[in-house]
Image 1 (cartoon, rainbow, N blue to C red):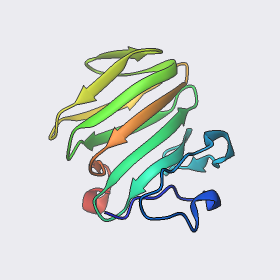
Image 2 (image 1 turned 60 degrees about the vertical axis):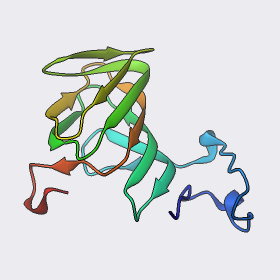
Image 3 (image 1 turned 90 degrees about the vertical axis):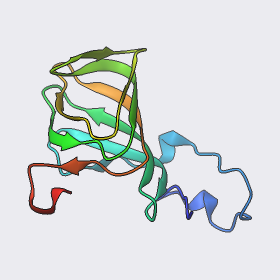
Image 4 (image 1 turned 135 degrees about the horizontal axis):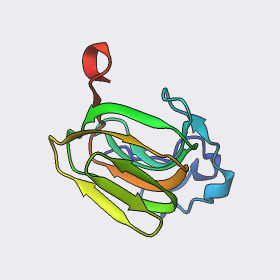
Length: 129
Protein backbone atom coordinates (compact mmCIF):
# COMPACT_ATOMS: atom_id res chain seq x y z
CA UNK A 1 0.00 0.00 0.00
CA UNK A 2 1.25 3.46 -0.95
CA UNK A 3 -1.09 5.70 0.99
CA UNK A 4 -0.59 9.46 0.96
CA UNK A 5 -2.30 12.82 1.33
CA UNK A 6 -1.94 14.49 -2.08
CA UNK A 7 -1.09 18.21 -2.23
CA UNK A 8 0.29 18.21 1.31
CA UNK A 9 4.03 18.95 1.32
CA UNK A 10 4.32 18.72 5.14
CA UNK A 11 4.44 14.92 4.76
CA UNK A 12 7.44 14.90 2.44
CA UNK A 13 10.45 13.29 4.09
CA UNK A 14 8.54 11.63 6.95
CA UNK A 15 9.67 8.19 8.06
CA UNK A 16 7.67 5.31 6.59
CA UNK A 17 5.92 4.53 9.91
CA UNK A 18 5.42 8.12 11.11
CA UNK A 19 1.91 9.41 11.83
CA UNK A 20 0.55 11.77 9.19
CA UNK A 21 -1.21 14.73 10.83
CA UNK A 22 -3.22 16.75 8.33
CA UNK A 23 -4.29 20.37 8.75
CA UNK A 24 -7.38 19.99 6.61
CA UNK A 25 -7.91 23.75 6.22
CA UNK A 26 -4.60 23.90 4.32
CA UNK A 27 -5.67 21.33 1.72
CA UNK A 28 -7.07 22.77 -1.50
CA UNK A 29 -10.62 22.10 -2.64
CA UNK A 30 -10.40 20.25 -5.94
CA UNK A 31 -13.15 20.16 -8.54
CA UNK A 32 -14.63 16.81 -9.48
CA UNK A 33 -16.08 16.10 -12.91
CA UNK A 34 -19.55 16.71 -11.43
CA UNK A 35 -20.84 20.28 -11.38
CA UNK A 36 -21.09 21.71 -7.86
CA UNK A 37 -19.11 18.93 -6.14
CA UNK A 38 -15.59 19.56 -4.81
CA UNK A 39 -13.33 17.42 -2.64
CA UNK A 40 -10.33 17.51 -0.32
CA UNK A 41 -8.44 14.22 -0.41
CA UNK A 42 -7.37 13.25 3.12
CA UNK A 43 -5.97 9.81 2.32
CA UNK A 44 -5.49 8.05 -0.99
CA UNK A 45 -3.92 4.83 -2.18
CA UNK A 46 -4.14 4.88 -5.96
CA UNK A 47 -3.02 1.23 -6.24
CA UNK A 48 -5.82 -0.20 -4.07
CA UNK A 49 -8.45 2.48 -4.70
CA UNK A 50 -8.72 3.43 -1.01
CA UNK A 51 -9.93 7.01 -0.59
CA UNK A 52 -10.98 9.15 2.36
CA UNK A 53 -12.18 12.61 1.37
CA UNK A 54 -14.27 15.58 2.36
CA UNK A 55 -16.87 16.44 -0.25
CA UNK A 56 -18.55 19.83 -0.54
CA UNK A 57 -21.79 19.82 -2.53
CA UNK A 58 -23.34 23.08 -3.68
CA UNK A 59 -27.13 23.41 -3.46
CA UNK A 60 -28.66 21.47 -6.35
CA UNK A 61 -25.54 19.33 -7.02
CA UNK A 62 -26.20 15.85 -8.35
CA UNK A 63 -24.13 12.66 -8.60
CA UNK A 64 -25.27 10.52 -11.55
CA UNK A 65 -26.08 6.83 -11.45
CA UNK A 66 -23.13 4.86 -10.07
CA UNK A 67 -22.31 1.50 -8.54
CA UNK A 68 -20.41 1.00 -5.30
CA UNK A 69 -17.74 -1.56 -6.17
CA UNK A 70 -16.97 -2.04 -2.47
CA UNK A 71 -18.61 -0.74 0.72
CA UNK A 72 -18.98 3.05 0.71
CA UNK A 73 -19.47 5.11 3.87
CA UNK A 74 -20.60 8.73 4.30
CA UNK A 75 -20.95 10.91 7.40
CA UNK A 76 -22.71 14.25 6.88
CA UNK A 77 -21.14 17.18 8.72
CA UNK A 78 -23.37 19.98 7.38
CA UNK A 79 -26.52 20.14 5.26
CA UNK A 80 -27.98 16.99 3.72
CA UNK A 81 -27.96 14.76 0.68
CA UNK A 82 -30.41 12.14 -0.52
CA UNK A 83 -31.17 9.36 -2.91
CA UNK A 84 -34.33 7.47 -3.80
CA UNK A 85 -34.07 5.47 -0.54
CA UNK A 86 -33.74 8.28 1.99
CA UNK A 87 -32.08 11.42 3.34
CA UNK A 88 -28.80 11.71 5.26
CA UNK A 89 -28.69 14.90 7.39
CA UNK A 90 -25.99 16.60 9.46
CA UNK A 91 -24.85 14.17 12.15
CA UNK A 92 -26.16 11.14 10.25
CA UNK A 93 -24.22 8.31 8.65
CA UNK A 94 -25.03 6.00 5.77
CA UNK A 95 -23.17 3.04 4.30
CA UNK A 96 -23.91 1.19 1.13
CA UNK A 97 -23.06 -2.42 0.27
CA UNK A 98 -20.84 -3.42 -2.63
CA UNK A 99 -22.92 -3.73 -5.78
CA UNK A 100 -25.52 -1.15 -4.74
CA UNK A 101 -26.48 1.49 -7.31
CA UNK A 102 -28.08 4.90 -6.95
CA UNK A 103 -28.08 8.55 -7.89
CA UNK A 104 -27.55 11.14 -5.14
CA UNK A 105 -28.32 14.84 -4.89
CA UNK A 106 -28.36 17.71 -2.41
CA UNK A 107 -31.09 20.33 -2.46
CA UNK A 108 -29.51 22.55 0.21
CA UNK A 109 -25.83 21.62 -0.21
CA UNK A 110 -23.74 19.59 2.19
CA UNK A 111 -20.33 18.82 3.58
CA UNK A 112 -19.63 15.12 4.06
CA UNK A 113 -16.79 12.81 4.96
CA UNK A 114 -16.68 9.75 2.70
CA UNK A 115 -14.69 6.51 2.78
CA UNK A 116 -14.18 4.31 -0.28
CA UNK A 117 -12.34 0.99 -0.48
CA UNK A 118 -12.57 1.07 -4.30
CA UNK A 119 -13.63 3.84 -6.69
CA UNK A 120 -17.27 4.02 -7.74
CA UNK A 121 -18.17 2.82 -11.21
CA UNK A 122 -20.18 5.53 -12.95
CA UNK A 123 -22.77 4.23 -15.35
CA UNK A 124 -23.13 7.47 -17.34
CA UNK A 125 -19.82 7.16 -19.24
CA UNK A 126 -17.89 4.78 -21.45
CA UNK A 127 -15.71 2.55 -19.30
CA UNK A 128 -17.70 3.37 -16.15
CA UNK A 129 -15.21 5.74 -14.44
